[in-house]
Length: 98
Image (tube, rainbow, N blue to C red; front, side):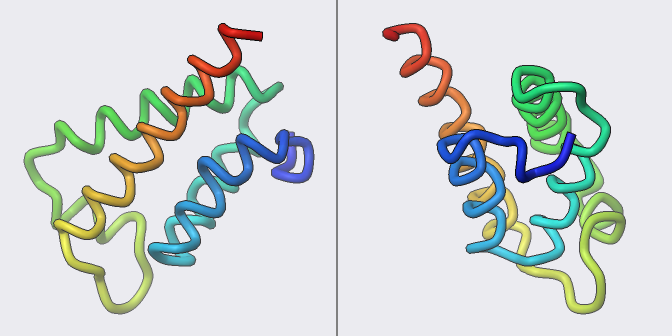
């Protein structure tokens, strides 16, 4: 699947939110989309990945794997991925109502 296949809501919730923080994070989530068959799988894998990242005890190594060049601050990174996670939860709740 390509990011062009994502709904506008999902694209905004994940890709644009990541881009607001750091382009390297956007690339990571775009790559994840290419490994998914559909949007539901993408949201599930994105959610699982972020939850694993938030539990990671070695944030420096994790960030070295995600970002190129200068690393952003850990707090900013955690805030950004937490926002994406919250956006996914909001999407799920909105989809349940429809």
